[in-house]
Amino acid sequence: MFNAESMLLIHGRVFDGTGNEPIPDGGVWIEGDEIRRVGSADQFDDVPDSVPRVDVGGRFVMPGLVESHSHLSYFNASSLQDLDMNCTAEATTIKAVLNARTMLRAGYTSAFSFGSLHAVDVELRRHINSGDIPGPRYVACGRDVLGTGGMVDWNPDHLQLGMDGLALLADNPWEVRKAIRTIRKNGADSVKVYLDGEGMIESDLPGELSYTQEEADAAADEGHRRNLKMICHARSADAVTMALKAGMDVIGHANYLDDEALDRLYRDRHRIFVTPAIHWQVGLYENGAEFGFTSGVLDGLGYKAEIAETINSVAKMKAKGIRILPGGDFGLAWTPHGTYARDLQNFVELFDYTPMEALVAATRDAGAMVDFGGKVGTLEAGKFADIVVVDGDPLTDITVLQDQDKIVSVIQGGRFFHNSMPAGPRFDLSAKPGMTPAEEDRLLSSAE
Ligand SMILES: [Zn+2]
Image 1 (cartoon, helix red, strand yellow):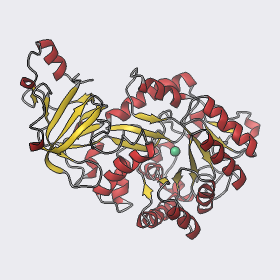
Image 2 (cartoon, helix red, strand yellow):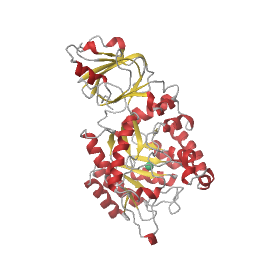
Image 3 (tube, protein in one colour):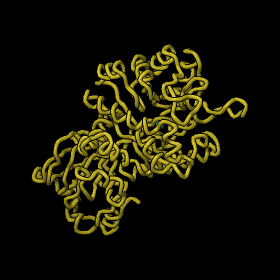
């Protein structure tokens, strides 16, 4: 493991995540867990000789990616029902620990959870922050909050199954407040509320509102007084409007918009974030057949039309300057963990983002959403040294980020989690006089 107190990454194509063109021959000076300076290679002459130089050989150096619609506690289940059944809390936790490692290895150094089984997210965040396990800096969500018959309350009563790990059922404003207070007590940073449904859930379809405005208002009010980020599942225009009236912070999906919803989004554009999570639908078409979701079945559930409508909605939101973030509902069998960067390709191919725009959305803008003291998302002095080195150019081919072999270094808080850049001449060890052979070995071996 190469974890010096400070180091200088030098001779990289440095993309800072702000939308500026990369510095062709640049460097990043890291001190402790922060970035001290970013600039062209000739601006580091004053760096003390004691600081190790890591020559990245012209590779692409960028901020750690941020997953904005994450479910680390989902375990690639092949049916939604399996999420709450067929897996104990203990097994779910172990799988979540492995998923957290997978996410970090994929170059995602931060993530925003969009819902957790049990209190798995809270324990994940706690143990990632204490350094016990590797994983992204994490905004931990509690169990989903929804009304009886809301989207994930999908087990009809005669089955006598209830809904345990995935959701807290709450009807009427005071039950909603109690559910949110419970989640706060158990340590989450955010709460997800279901405002409408989902194409594959017969008992609550998109546009079928499962909360009243009064309940949504109570949720947002209670969450905000307890300093929780309030996020919601809202596919239809009516659900999006309800979310904005209530004052939710993040809207998941927003597939369908009308003029009122778009107007309200525009008015709230400086505070609101939207995560379409379009890879839910795309992944179903690509991988769903073996789990019973053939394209015929999916068309029948309205997914094809939903993708088309989402493309329209995103175009309208993008034109209005609304921050739309990649994050693809990964954690089901058709959206497996580790493939997170696939949603960046969706932004380019479906939503007509340039690779630059997609990268800025997944770094600067998503960094603003996770909001770890404003220190995540870009490579700038004073930010956390969360850095990915890529053997390729995501600005010309966004898909390169899906190839783990090309994610050659993952640095989080100034420490290498992974490094597969060739050792030897690329590491200028002579810069650190007096180093023992054992220290050199440690310096050269990767974290894994
Ligand atoms: Zn989701």
